[in-house]
Image (cartoon, rainbow over all chains, first blue to last red; front, top):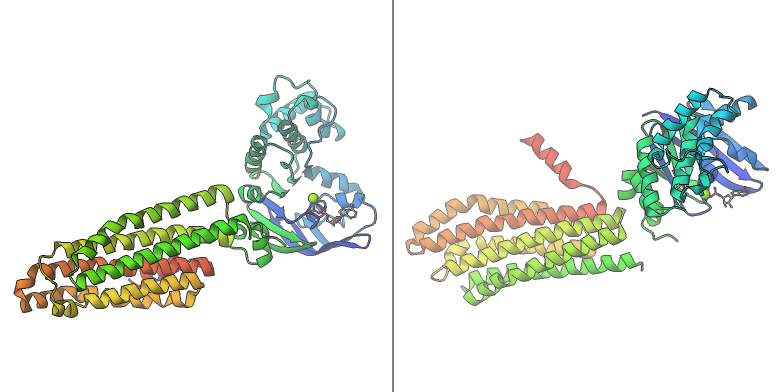
Length: 252
Length: 226
Ligand SMILES: Nc1ncnc2c1ncn2[C@@H]1O[C@H](COP(=O)(O)OP(=O)(O)O)[C@@H](O)[C@H]1O
Ligand SMILES: [Mg+2]
């Protein structure tokens, strides 16, 4: 399996703070990769490398290479950053729908990208709501405000919104940590469905969730990547004692 | 100590208790045969129930640990090993009880010469030593000791292979002990299995402590040999 994303000797500083230390890692295409580790170990920072969201944080210094489909995304022209962010969708911990209708939330990305063809937009909205396993629940109330949906539904709406502009990578930063178990289960099923078409990288605090949804797992600690491998191996027989301590809840 | 640690400690203690009980069953079975002690043989048969209930308890404990703690890595391997060891111990318990049952089927003492010539007492000695050593290997996390089990299984296999000839010779020498000779042959056939069970247990110990699945390697090698 080829790597969709590859980081080579990546270091990231927030001012004086060394947040990512020499991270070299390949993320396989059309698979789910989970990033685990205690709070503050750099998971979100690592995730934000891939859509260059860290660039928006002042005093951030990045060295090393971040390759996406073999191309170093920190060497591309500034005019191509928008295209990069279209290719890399992101879903956050708290569902953050726009104060608009359900339909407009999903159509939003298409409209800001200059698409005006009404029937294309309608088709795309329906398709991505299906992909996000939300269509049956919202098809009769597309004009209603997104805020009328439950938390779990809002999160799936945000996933649909990310899918509408047809990215190839989806980043998820603790996408289910604010949701109840049923909604969490739906998101996990959805991740499983989506991986045949997308490369998914998910940050999660829930170890069992990482075990259930991911094919690969990376364990971060204090800004370093301690271990990366097949999830089955990491959860049954990790190579590093630190990984074992963390996944078995005996940390520190 | 985490809550899970204390559950795992209790699980280990239960396994060790079961082990001692089953070893005790084997030893009593040998004494019942050697001394033609029918009461002791009865006791062994009766005690099989206790062995079974230990296995059920261990199964139940493992089920609870899976459901409530979702163990991973080393913890997971311990629970898996506990399940399989419990199962193998239960089978050794069955064997001990069936041998005791054969003792009860005899009408007279077992002639010492026959016990000697058929090597059944030697078989008991090796099998019981294997059990004691697997127990120690588990308790002390000694995979080197666990590895010594495989060689000793071959001793049991050899006694089992030679048994038919030796029993035939015994029948010729002691025509009045035909029934007992046949019982000894049946016992040997049963006791041979204790070696296989101990080998399984040794593999589980190695799997638990070294995270290697020896079984598959060995199987492949065997298939290649044949
Ligand atoms: N914008 C920022 N400015 C300064 N430090 C930051 C910033 N964002 C994160 N950090 C620090 O970088 C480290 C990694 O943070 P983060 O990637 O959010 O960790 P995680 O997602 O694993 O909890 C933390 O110590 C955090 O305090
Ligand atoms: Mg984070």
